[in-house]
Length: 254
Length: 247
Image 1 (tube, rainbow over the protein chains, first blue to last red):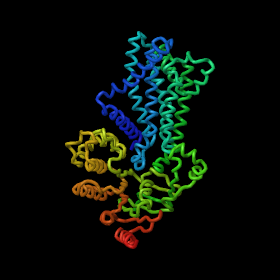
Image 2 (image 1 turned 90 degrees about the vertical axis):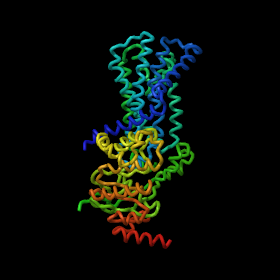
Image 3 (image 1 turned 90 degrees about the horizontal axis):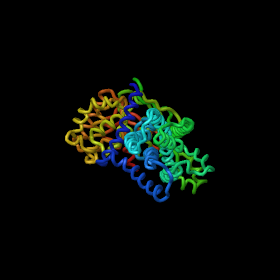
Image 4 (image 1 turned 120 degrees about the vertical axis):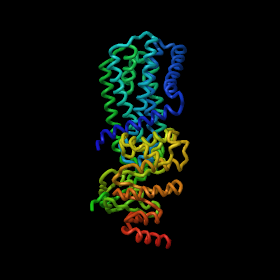
């Protein structure tokens, strides 16, 4: 039996389950998944453009080109903390690669992210930003780095939460802090010089910055991309190692 | 005869994760005790050795907490022994408890595909067997309804119907045949008999001694983390029940 095609099937059905469940729960599944980041964008637009008077051009476009990728990251990582407990009965009985469970979550949110790209394109059109050639390779490349980061964090969070069950709460707080420490609702140019280097400690910063770059300026900053790819690979490997080390104990603690 | 499952001096211990699974907060609050506890482990199975031959049906009996489920977990490969070796030959399929791995929002049909693949079939294999599975479950009318509308008996029927169409070399059964109405229970028993006839190796955990006597070629009695007796199911069950009667 070729296990590779079997694993492909397994990833497929697990991801399809997540996607179907998300769409079936409510009739307007797709609309809802887009409405959430869009409504956040509206609120931030009001708060930062009208109240705080942040001096940025195309601010709506700026907001959604950061919020949509953020949504993918935060949904996946947020859901990861409880995902193994939710599948306890399977983990205790069936022997299949455990990392497929968080993988299905990340792929599900990736699917939604890709489905929401037309909304970003719509705003590009509205703001008369024309597409560039860099989109054709830049978007897939950025999806790759963000996938590695998201999957890496998912693996860490999901496996550790089994042993320390309050990880779930730490993740919620952490995501909240990370959101404001990443230049999503403000631009890095507004950050005082002495804080700027610290931003490179945040693995999400280069990725979000690249998303801004490609959707607002239409190009990829290769230096920044190399940094983010390096960070992403490191996080992915770290996550994979932690998960692999702990996965033998999953059935013991569930 | 060829062996299908081999346990060689298998010892399995579990950690005391109480302080850990209570969260970081508790772990830090009770730090000295918690650290001491992470090293302590309790023994669930102690130096257990036995062989199950190909095509055999072996029943595992014993009191609650004796280590029966640990034994199945080791055979399924979801637990790793601390000492010794567990060897299984061929495709191992566990019989899942009621509705495990099902999703309430998906339809019966979608759940069949999901569960079938989780249990080791490829998607195409499940699709090929779909009609047979649906027919066996007798749920034709409801098969395209979401699972949350099913009664628990219907869920069990759907679950067993998937198992019944697997093509395992080794089947692990953990106390499952007590679900559904009498007709369906009989159908399940018949199906297990069929598996036996087809040469599937079966390891079955049960509290139902009559069932063990009827289905199994041999029985293993586990008591206090060790094998107390192994052999003819009638004799082993007799010894086990006479002990129960004494207490």
